[in-house]
Image (tube, rainbow, N blue to C red; front, top):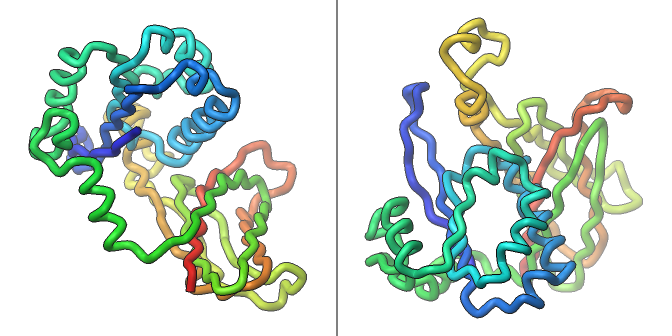
Length: 263
């Protein structure tokens, strides 16, 4: 079980940014689960999404109720994670230690009551969030790696509609649009998805006043709905065009979230 919480810190850039503290509770998790290939692959994919699309958003990640064999699993998993992210991860087995650390990181009224705080329990928070959302029947996510061009196909069934959101920290950006498979003339939702940096990377002040972490933190992530209420049935292709040469070595990363709603 995991729960995402947010904290606010003050930067040398004299601006506020929001960060999150993640708690991963391993209580009751068996060794067969933590060493399962599919589970490890999902952990790798999640760490890729977090580190590439949402850098500097995570302040600290604490793993609690870690079983004795977790050290071996962590030694396998940390090879997938960049050193900056590794430094943010703390592992605790003893409740007395993780309880104290949780309250150091999170205000008591924001920490769920399940974990020693006075905030709403995780169960009540989930139920409250669900009551405010559209009745999403399924959600598909795809991390698109774009050099010059990339696409992804999503299939809709009878009585389904589709909303598409794209997230990125890329300051190069890409133009996104949607077409029915086999019909490129019918274009839906053409939008430029591009993050904005509060600092000009070419500015001379970078040498003396701003370090690399501040530069990364200055990027304002872009979140854009590129299509809304596409009606099924049918197959739809999501196109992304960065405008760069096909010979380019660099990639831009975009997290595409497809919310499918039963109509």
